[in-house]
Image 1 (cartoon, rainbow, N blue to C red):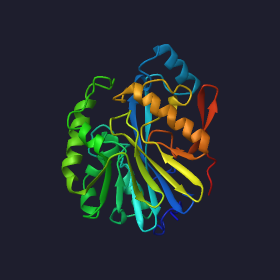
Image 2 (tube, rainbow, N blue to C red):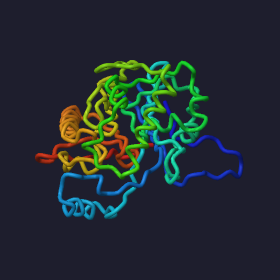
Image 3 (cartoon, rainbow, N blue to C red):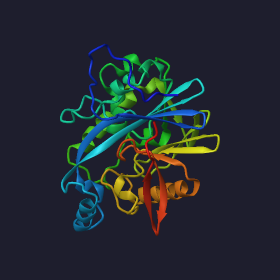
Image 4 (cartoon, rainbow, N blue to C red):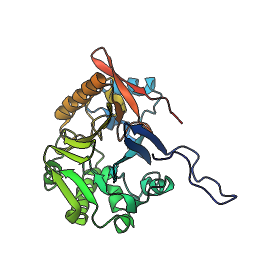
Length: 305
């Protein structure tokens, strides 16, 4: 099983970080490690673009969040099933100026005793820069196996040939950077792409499936083993979405479809009692979903050591 223990350090060495950045758990026979890629500052207005700003301001105040900018968590996940080590998403990367606290996953993966060279598969939930940028960071491709398999939905690859931003509400510079990053990713890893249509078993008990919504090819990853379940939901949900599943996020390319996907995943998780991990919930983002009237409630797990 993945270890939450820090690697051995030379005598007199001190930890480089003062907060936890990885969390290990087990789903049946599947070892899981959630790794923080850091945080990304974003305008709070992007959290709810279809409601009165006063309503969003009230939600922010009730949740002790600042009114204008907030730190957007970036989480990736590693699963070990059989002889395969699967990285799910790859964070932002370190090549974007102005985001010094993001792009941490390669170092943190190494600190956890998982060299990039051991990764057999990568699942990309979608091709936004904060999910594929880490694969474009300096030195990452050179360390990955030449035969690493990168699983991504055909609808996602097709979407980024002519991406539609007409329904998004992002900071002005973002769409161009998203376009260029997605193109660079597709060009760089073209020979490694394993394209799937609707659903694909990556490894025993590790299934990626198409949901659409956030992007046309957005996908989630389901882990199942010995009657236990975990879903890595990518960008299908954000902290505000449990109480308000109908609120639109500014980074959603199809907000109406996204709201439907979000509610469907909440219903599924509330029914099966499975664990939830998502890219932008507060680290380690491991919890469960409960119904709360017509909405839902996020129930974080109690950390286990």
